[in-house]
Length: 80
Image 1 (cartoon, rainbow, N blue to C red):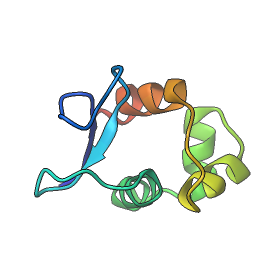
Image 2 (tube, one colour):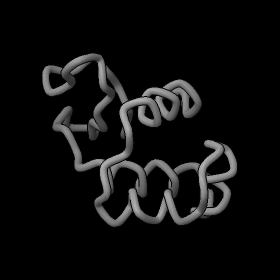
Image 3 (cartoon, rainbow, N blue to C red):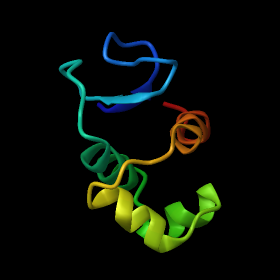
């Protein structure tokens, strides 16, 4: 189980963090890729759902930090 939440000690300034089933935080890149695969979406499908480019999602999955507003929207949109 993986979730994107602000209800975790490593979340600061109300910015969501990815948390694995063991309640340990994950890197954003790993968390985004894992959630996308759980939803069975391609990078293009996730990008379309979030209103960003496919390249933006690819950058996130390669380690580029998403903007806090994108993380908050993702947490709301993905229902985690």
